[in-house]
Image (cartoon, rainbow, N blue to C red; front, side):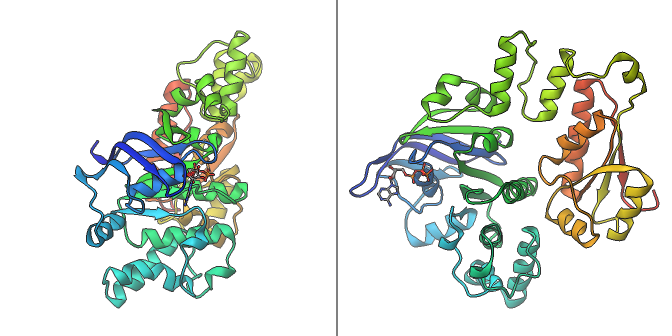
Length: 394
Ligand SMILES: Nc1ncnc2c1ncn2[C@@H]1O[C@H](COP(=O)(O)OP(=O)(O)OP(=O)(O)O)[C@@H](O)[C@H]1O
């Protein structure tokens, strides 16, 4: 993997303020999903602001693709085009009287033609699930919708790296799940993503790598399993262990056999329990329970009206919509999805209980579903089947 951003020996102190960052060293590789985790005041926002040159270190270096960042106007403009930043509070970012104008701000400044601006804005709005919002005044939107407008504004500049300061702050659980799903969609589109959060439950299953920050210093960095399973470290950072790990630790102390991998989802946990012969169907029932199937619907190939027929004909008991296109399709087809985040694992969980499910999604994510189900089948010695619906005829 190529190193995109590298930070070396970085120090920063706000004028008349505390030492906000002390001797920071880390690098970000292309395609990574990184969570910067720490309690209030740890320095997360300050560090994120270094990534696209909004703050300049007092000492040390930030480099992008091997080149040290230069803090003149021209170079900063270039850098900010490649590293997009979505603020914690969308009101900081939204400036125009309509959603269209707000999202168009970047492309207009980049000198796009009228048609290019229009196409880019509409594409970005559809990526964040806000088509039809073009004429709305942003200040009349909900907090979650404003966050999406801010994201669309950044996507319109097509950056390589997306930085989100507390992407789910002030959102309800469904709004948070929607935003996290959007981040996954952007990642599937090839973007490198860095978020800050103090929500360990959110960071643990999502991130490829976690950087733990406290009082302006990096305490640890590594894969989430290692960082969050270190109780003393997590406590020192004034955070708590993700609840699945806490439960796993507690049960292994009482004799539960340890598994090869730590549980990242309820599905993983159920799998670990079943390896310990806990929660399995009794032998006589097990014989009769066949795994449910996952019906995979490609939104670009199947019409909304046809989905209802597939649901009825295949006795589908739970539906997941993965991605904004799928959610829009569900809305048009009058389908209320049961899952919109963590969809694959939730459908696998239903499948092992013998229930048929449907996942509605689009091109980029179809392979992800196949890969995850293949991996789960291999690990759990099951044969959960995927039926691909590329057109209704099959
Ligand atoms: N503009 C500023 N001027 C002076 N001090 C500041 C400024 N912004 C932040 N600080 C201080 O720098 C330190 C790091 O703040 P920062 O906002 O980066 O932390 P954070 O981890 O993002 O916190 P939170 O989770 O509460 O948003 C804190 O002690 C804070 O008081």
